[in-house]
Length: 172
Image (cartoon, rainbow, N blue to C red; front, side, top):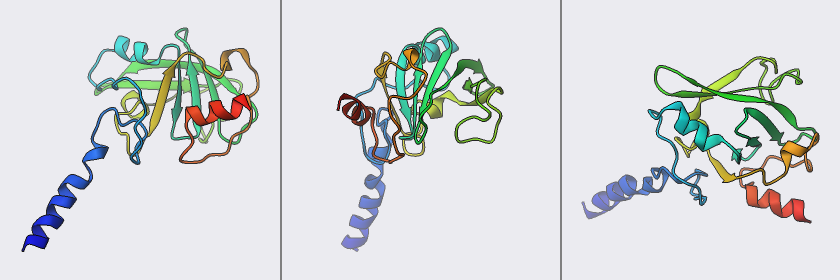
């Protein structure tokens, strides 16, 4: 009976480290980022969260999102940058984060045309679900993406890739 109680307690407590709203990398990693924006906040709160930030989504997408609505995407496996736009829209439940890349035939990783807006819940992009949508972010354009046409280098997708890891490669 005692084994059963211990096993039940281990199952109940074993997943607690995933429930932190600032555990921003999922899979047990915790990055030093500010708390996420809850889904019911106004668009201005989301805009402040995104403006002038470099962020990595799922260890394969590195975005720089300046406040003026331009978007710079450095995608794993690509030599060129995807240069486009970002915007926020209010949906019935939350805010939608949308991107489009008019110069690209398709959105990276998607069959949708690059000149079409591709939207998803901002809450999930920015850490509302750190297990399935891991991300990390820092202030500023740490890779100088806004001043480039091509990516600093081609990186390979790896679940353990971080912004700091990419910065270390850039310094070499």
